[in-house]
Image 1 (tube, rainbow, N blue to C red):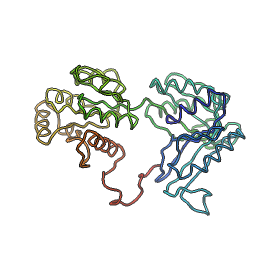
Image 2: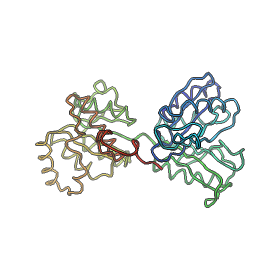
Image 3: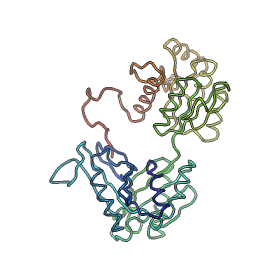
Image 4: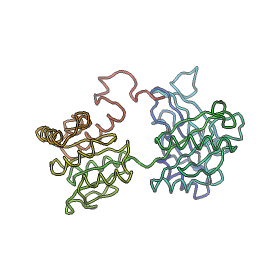
Length: 373
């Protein structure tokens, strides 16, 4: 929902009712993940996407209908098959999409949720998408680490879902949970989609060089909260890094250690070391390679890389810790410019996150998007 939140909130503030379609469950090679959303306004304006184009028309029609009836609908779209689905995903996979009316009456906490997301505060939205009693459909619970607001229909259901939603929020996952009609953990009948809105993952870029500006732009484009750090104040200026969320003047290893101590680095964090200067990058990598983060990459020639490995071993890092380092940084795309290099770095980060091999799709078989469950 994050991608369409500003459009949805604008309709909400104006007093309109909009149709919100959200991917709540995927199977096999589905084109969009759970949480992807599309907003249809009463005037027919559309923002967002739930399938990359495959079933947008059908969801648009359903959302328009839901705006008029006020009744939420859970609809499944799958592989094109006239016997199985009226509208199919020609690219394969299966999507469950929940389409609901959103207004100040149906979602009175939307503005508060938007404030949490904008301020990087964790918040989850738990919505009933299936229940034996139609009156429960569309009811929601807004769950924060220390509080929950709203109700799904009973105190028992609220307590069970709030507890489970906090677990998903802590892990940064969105998924469908199943309960009995009154929130019984071992029952069936009620399905609740928990959309987790954890703070954006961080990209920490060290080295205020032209390549860093291009990497910061790529990181911002991919949805990271980007911080650029360099010990040299003449280079580390906001004007040189307009796409970064923050620019810090500090010694890289000291800044990273402080962020770790503050709990601001987690398993989703990616670290790009672009200084290729041993007095900066070796102390920094001593800290970075001992962290449980998603990615640590360092720029430099192969000669620089070999020298760096020697220095890291002399500093006491183990072979297992050194093996976490992506260096020379990026995939082999043949690029030369800072922008092309930044694309290769972003491509390596994406490949490591999803387990991609970085090969041309023409040389591979099987699902393009990988298996999702």
